[in-house]
Length: 478
Ligand SMILES: [Zn+2]
Ligand SMILES: [Zn+2]
Image (cartoon, rainbow, N blue to C red; front, side, top):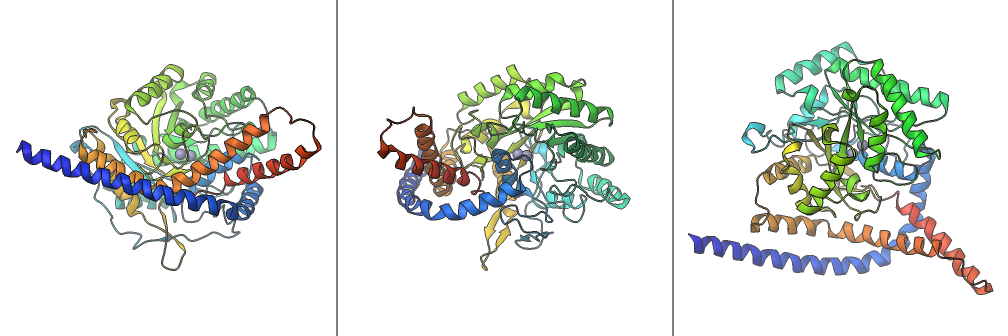
């Protein structure tokens, strides 16, 4: 018996080592390719970035970056920001939209009550999100309550509301606990301009009212952008808008998402989340959603058990664990502290599977909605993008399998290495971009070069490359 399991472990380890060797080879080849390709991509990046900048409400590239990535869990009537197409784009889905791809796991059968799901489509009406969640075996889910890129949307129809409640009952979702709608990308509660601030507030309040009509208690939103004002002023304006919205509604909890950016983006540091909460009058109406990719890119490590514990202790000290209401589960294509918002599939990014093992086995996270916003777009035979929701169905099962799993077994390690290998091409590509940018930033802050006539030319070149890299920041999400 023992010998048999030893043999199994040994063969698994051999496979692990073999896979690791293959990964190393792949990474070497890709490194070379990336170096050749990166310059050729500059022109394309520039075009894309220009189009993104045009549509930016806040004039803040980091914010737009975050916005763009979350398209991955988008509804069908969204406008692809990268292509900036004027009309609504119908997204294709692999197979039948209504095909069940996995059965829901009974949470009671898990060692921990983890409610894992994804940001599903609500195209054709928010009631459709329920079947979409059922089809991927999700025990929690996120959805946009209306078009997230339009200021005006028709009111919630009575039929929609009725059907939503009926389907909730039929499928046994607890709307108050496990549904986490995502706010509009247009809304910036830190907006200083009165007319624009009112427009943002109206849109925000309309969503909160929709939540209450649907029996939903948690509402997730991005805190916003300072627009060049001080962080203190922005935080004050966000809190004032929250206070106003709480008075205009009864029960919905406004859940602030942590961000990955720096500069004008509000909410990438735990202290900023705390400062908003401190100014909210009714503390029972405010919470936080941790996006794992955003946290990692903002400089909060989750990879090793020790780093994870330290980050959670920091969160508890600064914000308070009682404010933690939800998770967005995403791996990161960009390295630690890079302030770039590039969601990766679970285990394939710089976070790696171990980070998610830490999360799945942390008791205080029980009963919180945990929503995947990982990429599911694949290239179809015609070269067009096709949504493969099987990826979410599989990721949900993968995350559930981590609950109570011993991370020191060969089973876990093999899975970890396999997933790491899958993401190596993307990781090398983004690491390369980040390294180049860091190099150029370092040159930028250097004291002025000796005032030789010769220095002028390279300086100009550096300036140009900087802007090229800034463009790269905006172009990588799938
Ligand atoms: Zn978000
Ligand atoms: Zn998120």
